[in-house]
Image 1 (cartoon, rainbow, N blue to C red):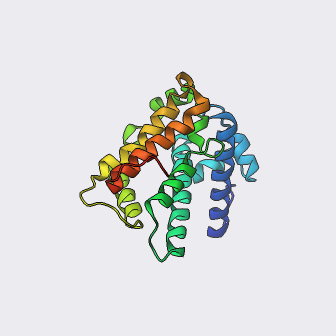
Image 2 (cartoon, rainbow, N blue to C red; image 1 turned 90 degrees about the vertical axis):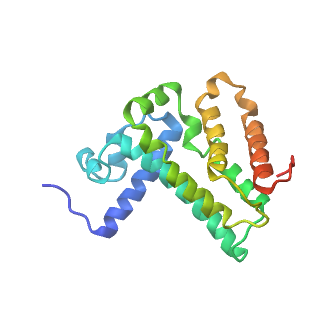
Image 3 (tube, rainbow, N blue to C red; image 1 turned 120 degrees about the vertical axis):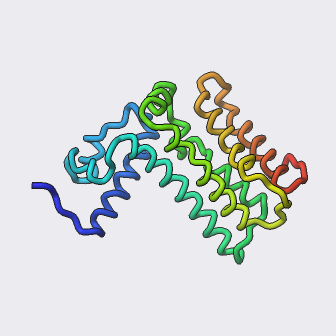
Length: 200
């Protein structure tokens, strides 16, 4: 007989699965992720897992969305403490927290994982241009001293440069990648403010 959960319990289990899934991804990557172990960690059967997420692919997408939403909520909370507006530097420092190697699941993806993603997840589920523009507008609405005429597509491409670097980290000097990310962030600052600067 299938397990029956209250709405509150469903929310709790889903949050636990996402948390455990992110931790497993950080340790093992995507192809090393074991759905049976994840289900057991949440006290449910493997088959019940698929009542929460229809597939492993959907689960991976949810982990990324959950991580991004969590960071965006942190930025919104910081803006609220400052009466709704942050400096561009504060926003860029937040951006750097997105790319902490020990926390971001992207840093723990191997080439084998990337092959799996490309084979299993449709590109339209990974690349959602309308959502990216929406997020860009939301972020810039929280900032002071933003220049006029910003193209949100250009803004969305800056973090993608970092993501592509992470995907190909095996062919890069990984010990200095974070320094390269800072440089991309400096370029983003120059684009947003119209004032070139090497400081964040």
